[in-house]
Length: 258
Image 1 (cartoon, helix red, strand yellow):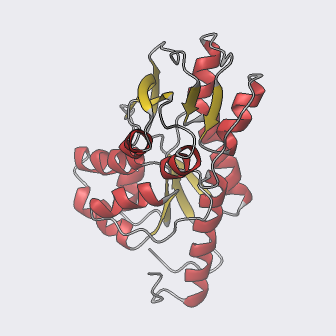
Image 2 (image 1 turned 120 degrees about the vertical axis):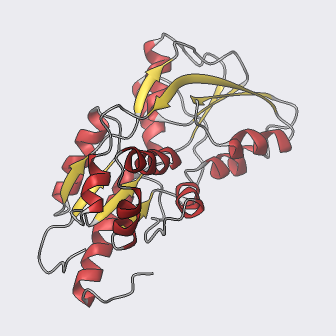
């Protein structure tokens, strides 16, 4: 990565190709960054809706929107969601949100729910790439857990431009928003024959992960993470990444971010 100076950081964003990537690009621009949009996730609805249960857990805004579009209603079920964005989508659908954890992760949901789920039927409705942490944690707390897959996540056919840019030092930072974005970025780099070069570029860039599970996935695959925000939201991630780039630029090209 070249000297930052007053240059706008070039930041890759991997959100799905819908309003989420549009809002992410707009946010990064407002923070003084030059975003590179490279959607690494494609949403394929299954048409399923959550089964009836006293407690239903939804782990994404996308899941809420798909369940609502399919005509699902919580009815008498209590509704737990993973964070504020998911809660806002649920309230927009006219639903009452009963539980939002303090930590917006699967582990945070387990911590919020474990005091009340012993002996209770719980439905977790989410993508096909959900973390085992949530299901295992609820089962260990004594819940009878079932899972409904609302949508599948795949890598779009055209994904990977950011990997080629990273391979030639044309990116300053990346914003990984899930474990799957890490995996898909590395897979795209491999498919395009730039795996080693892209990894070298990542080592010289500001690498942001939205939360500890995503950071752990990156570390497991040999990618050092520089930034994990306190709040698991894209706004917090983008702000932290841009701030880290600015700090590194102010300290000079030889500064050790890690």
